[in-house]
Length: 54
Image (cartoon, rainbow, N blue to C red; front, side):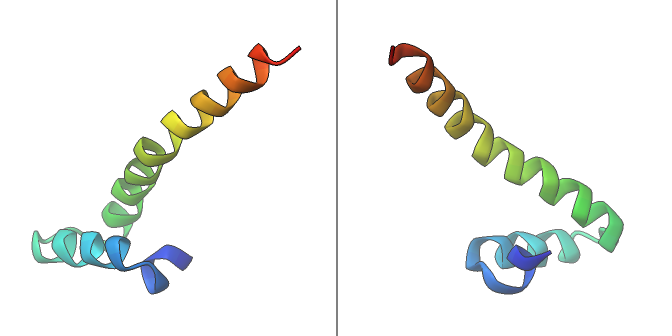
């Protein structure tokens, strides 16, 4: 919700989805997926780095 108000890339994404005719509920669902696709690789990389260090 905060990103929808403050982060430029997310605002552009929400605007694009709104123009496609998506409802607010659908936009929230899509946005969750969008954020996970961005964060998941970072989390995995961090976990792998943590497991390598003795």
